[in-house]
Length: 177
Image 1 (cartoon, helix red, strand yellow):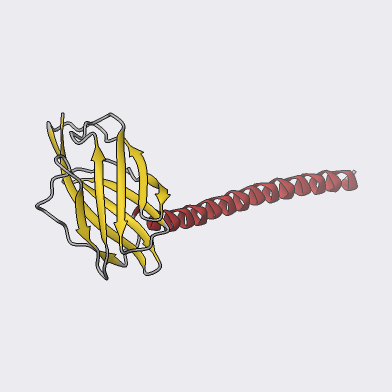
Image 2: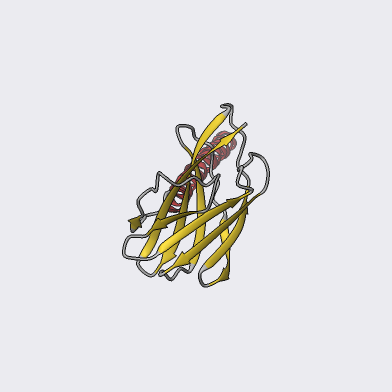
């Protein structure tokens, strides 16, 4: 009888140990999954940092006298060359397709993008990549979002990928609601 009692206790002890071991394994598994998710999140945010705020090798001066609503604007690039941006229709309506045209002179570019940024108000990520038409001309489309303000000031940063690195040329304009 004593042996039966001891074997029952032994079975209960083994069962309890197995339950604790399973519980401990589940805790370890969830801890591992949480750590892997954290590492993945850190890697993704590090990669997105470069996409959202690229490292710029040179920045052209802002040509404040130019009005994209009246005519194409040209900016002199550091190290030589120029970039000209035109947006049509030149009224630059919101929530309507816009045609972007970038023309280059004296600079070799492998990729061109236009990054639209609201001045004084975050309007979200809006950076279309332009298609090469020739070695000196890139075209693309964009749509500007609506703003609660009746007049919204914008900066269109033309981002040019060159052998020297990323060159940025800013252009300012406004939209009306």
